Image (cartoon, rainbow, N blue to C red; front, side):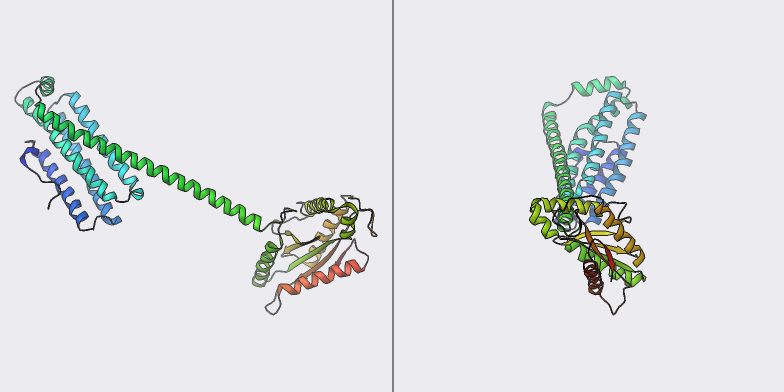
Length: 373
């Protein structure tokens, strides 16, 4: 069964126009048949349908407007006729652009074509044909246009008005639907961006120490594993510093835990200054309590010792009072240093153990110093 049945009431008597209308009727019926058979919803079939329509509109509208110019149809009618053509082309573009947001773009396209064809052929094209007939019979174009305006059958005009209204309603509904879908897509895209940003923030929070604002133990463990495998692959040394605040328990007992928290925050900022840790890959992290660690990829023992001394000097340079310390009247740190050349038979735990031995040696030697394992 055909979706659009042609009869002689659609004929304009203009051969080039009627032939093109037959082409559009065939396109509509092919699309309707594909819809019934469930074959119109694939991206390939939809693209083919829109491609055929694009070719049709370019050819048919150009031929129709050329015919009106050749026959010297009133510019007033030609301008209105051209507006209808432009409106239809823009509607097709909008349908194609918004196809992804429609549940059934083929059905929307089919309904639009049926309503537009009935409205256009029975209305503006028949009016054009009558004016062309009058002009070819010798009537001036403007007189033919005025005659067309004054001699319209009321019943026919009422029917055309109803069809035109239905077409306009459908056009507005399609436009509103596309706008709503675009708005929904924009909101979804915005929510997706916000969710991505939230996930990044959550990931950052999960890898950061809430008190000190530096990497936490989890982030350090991940980085140690990553850098160990990189060193194994690229044959680069990997160094580690373990930093302990000298007699920090006595500091907390003497000044109170809130003061101890502030002290650790100041120490972490000083240790992480760009002039102290000079490369983006160097990672400062809180290992636990008052212990900090610094991971130094592709760094020799000499480079690690130099970095450790800069950290110790930066902290002593803060001159934070520590009246209950047996080491000095100010806050000091002890730092253990270790360097490894990752090998298949070794593990990151061996590097950690070596740095810990260095830290123990620094404490045993009187604290406020740097010691290598």
